[in-house]
Structures are given as structure tokens and as C-alpha cells.
Amino acid sequence: MLGLLIDWALCYFITWGFFAEPWTGAFTPICYFLYLGQYLFFTILGGATPGHRIVGLQIVRFSDSQMPTPKQALIRTALLGIVITAITFDHNGRGINERLSGTVLIRKRKN
Image: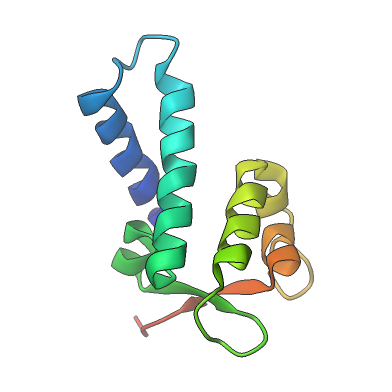
């Protein structure tokens, strides 16, 4: 949750600084799509968003623990945009977005 909060705050301040004021009608959709865009970009680029990196998490393929493919990153991001798929978990703790994209979020470092 901390990684999500960090990523959302980053997008919030970028939207506020460059695109719209928080009290305007355009602010929320711009911030939402900026969040999805940065999530996709960083997942493809390095398997982790800035928030993930700060808290020591990484997105990997479930099958072999390698970097997710761009297709997997796109599926994961699209399903993340539909919030219910990200907050619905199976018995292994994987969200629907993870199962359908073939990815998993792992802890990269020990606390």
C-alpha cells in the first residue's frame, strides 16, 4: 500500500504542477491516466514503479521470475485500472490482474 501511495502522490503533484488545479473537473481524470501511464511505463522499463522500488518490491513473471513482457505489463496495467481486479485475491494472495497477466509482485529485499 505504501508503494501505491507513493506512486499516486507522485502523479498527484505532477498533475497539479503541470496540468490542472486540484479543484478543477479535469484534475482527477488526468491524475488517473497519468498514474496508469507511469505504471505501464515503469513496469515495462524495469519491472517496478518508483513506489515499488522505494519499498523494495518488483513485478516479475509468475512462470520464471523474469522481467514481465510488454504484453504482460499492458494487461496488468489495464486490469489495475479496473480497481476490483487488483483488490480481489485468490488463495495465494495474487490479484486477478496478476493471474490474468501471468505476473506476481515480489519482495526484492528483506526488511
